[in-house]
Amino acid sequence: MKRYTLIALVTLSLLIIAVLTSVSAQDAPPPITLTLAGYAVPREAYGDIIPLFQAYWLEQTGQQVIVLESYQASGAQSRAVAGGFEADIVALSIEPDVTRLVDAGLVSEDWKDDNPYQGFATQSVVILTVRPGNPDGILDWADLAREGIEVITPDPATSGGAQWNILAAYGAARRGHVEGFEATDEGAAAFLSALIGNIGVLDRDGRESFLTFERGIGAVAITYENEYFAGVAAGGQYDVIYPTSTILIENPVAVVDTYVDAHGTREVAEAFVEFLWTPEAQAAFADHGFRPVNPTVRAAYGIVDPIVEGEEVAEIPAEEIEAIERNEAVTFPVIEDLFTIEEFGGWSEARPAFFGDEGLFTQLISQIRGQ
Image 1 (cartoon, rainbow, N blue to C red):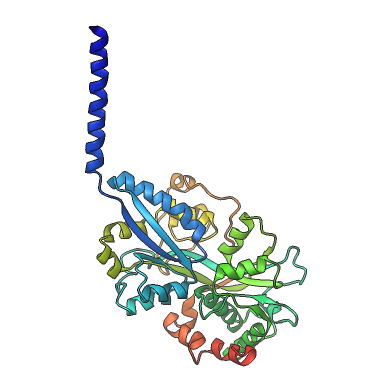
Image 2 (tube, rainbow, N blue to C red):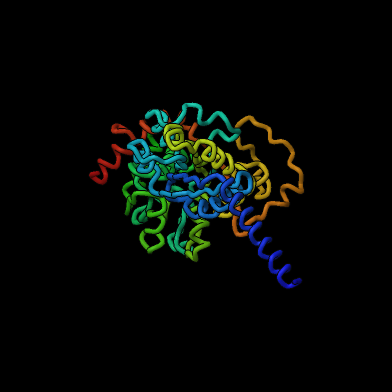
């Protein structure tokens, strides 16, 4: 009798577990799908961040999140979303690519106002990479105007990152940090003209452009600090040159309001964007060579300047800083002359002035390369 009683008890226990599991499964909300439309460069960083968010959301709500990812040049991605690609979230290279979506009525005009980071998930700076040992002796921007120096940079017509590159070069010259050229608009235009004459390949996005350089084409690549670190981590062989003067890159992220409301994904989409500013996500960005915007992670990497002009960063407890798992292979040097897009009056003035139909870069490249 005891044997049969034991069997019955085991059977009953298994039945209870099965019922409870079934009830729990029924209580759990159904999986939800998000579509992320990003520019090409941070693909690997999001590959680390997305599982962190999925685990966080599952723990908080019991709901599984499926994230569909799309990556291409920032401008092309922005145009695709404006044209009907129903992404829930956009992570782009430059603010004007989000502005296009605001103008299209897809993203709310106040997308920058509900967070302390003005809608920017990461920062970077424009730098130069050269062949191992720097055989061409490239030290700063002026060397990119030398005869016989082939320069690699993406096409500003498709790549937001390329626009950062061109503005970095022009701004450095106008601010008096390009030897041999006057610190005026005319002098900066002369330097930009010489630089364009040396451009060998104009790829459609930053990632393709850097891969072109990695394949052995060109003496120097104008690229982003994070691309250099990504290349080194993958075994790339090249040296980095930090220009005396360069521009601070700020990469925006936004919820696409029209599409999240149509999909019923607003809550999880907004949570995903908010998660990007947490120490966990920011540490993942930093691990891939992006300059973080979260003050704790910035402090862990020795970046001491405020992330928002005029904002005072409160003292951060040492234990919070020490809790950040830092990638010791990544360092963020201080730039002697670091300027922002405000050097050009903001994107609303810079983009048409340089990359519009009558813009300086557009006119110069047409004259020099026939494009």
